[in-house]
Length: 433
Image 1 (tube, rainbow, N blue to C red):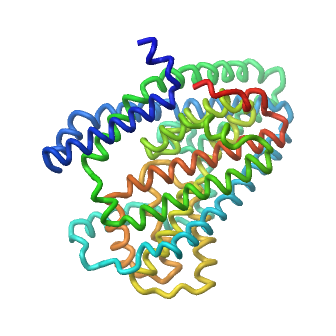
Image 2 (cartoon, helix red, strand yellow):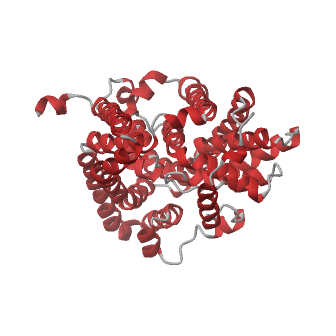
Image 3 (tube, helix red, strand yellow):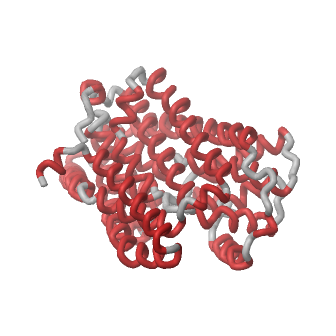
């Protein structure tokens, strides 16, 4: 057993991912899709769900304690505005580039060209209508901003409303700073809580290989490789665009802006990327991202506990990139002519829609209603697009989530570099996990 724990965690997670994929595909193509799906759902998926629940269990207390501790660690309340402002501006710039890259790759690969939209089963259309009707993609930007203010902080924590939790945690941290000596006992208690939560995160992460194996077995047993054949161009376009965004955009941030080794950055967040790929949830991956950024990349608590929770909420580069791809997919499938003005509207809309997107699997697909409306797609056409993509969106969401959390970590490193809050010796040292 000791030999198992001597293997770096990211390697154990990738081993679980590979074994899970092999088991799932072996089940599907040996005993049939229905039997494989039943076995995977009954015997494997519960273990994957348990792992995801373990991580989600950490999200609210970790965000609250680390964000309060990060604010109080600044000492000067004015630093919060400067740090947060830099992070938000950087997040917005990377998101804009993500949409542009998605549109570029979509124009080259042409994922929707020649697609038979009349072959969609009625059941899939009905499911898409129900899911589309239940989402809040059409909520106005002003309404989104107002909703950030919690009327009941306890309810916000119970509901896992990340934006409201961030808002309240920042106020609590500022209150501790402004109260000076009277606020120190509460600040010290929360700082202690943050340290405890990070320790719990390390404990939970030891279960990651098993959780990832279970999740990948379920995904491959229920979806199979056929999904790549059905819409292989869409899969290709998304994965290529996301990889290019990681290499070019984030590579520029780390290598040129922060002047740090990009390969070492990637090695430092491999654990988080593996968990993101298997869970398809930025929020669920947040505890792991925070641990990687602090332990492997040397980013201080002040920056990591402020920038990363913010990024998990507003930095959805993978989502924004996907919105651009979906718009082109629909335009090509339905013969909608894209004008330069429409490209601009898609870029603006996709960037805004991605802000505050819930960090849970597949939610970004149903936000496409807003993006598709700007290219003139009818409600029925929107339903068809969602019905086509939804059955295998999980496989696409995996890569989107990897892109999202990689962007969170990259911006955290850059902001830490600007603020003098990074230990470069730790960053340049070999990864510890």
